[in-house]
Length: 104
Image (cartoon, rainbow, N blue to C red; front, side, top):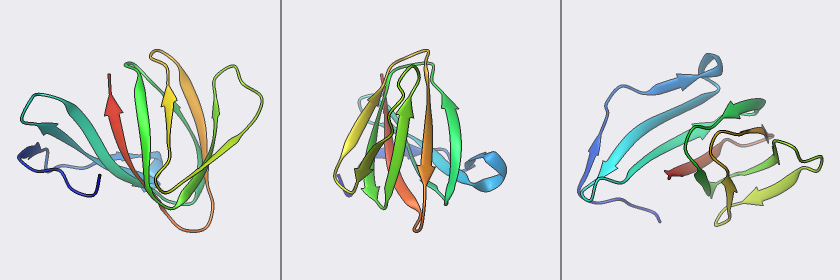
């Protein structure tokens, strides 16, 4: 999805890992919550509360879900699911990774 219409946007950015990950929280008209962000080249570890679907908008990443041993690569137009109350490692090399995180 290239555009979200009729949304509420939190103007203050969510800044993680000394600025290596920056996102904005949005709420759609139906109450659905998402975040839209960028991860700069780095290797980071994230914890989840709710289940998440990470949609790749641009760039690419490698991810490893908690409990798995293999890294998987995702590029533009692809997405991956992360269970709730879990974690994942993400590696971004080269260009920034642009994403939409769908919660729930």
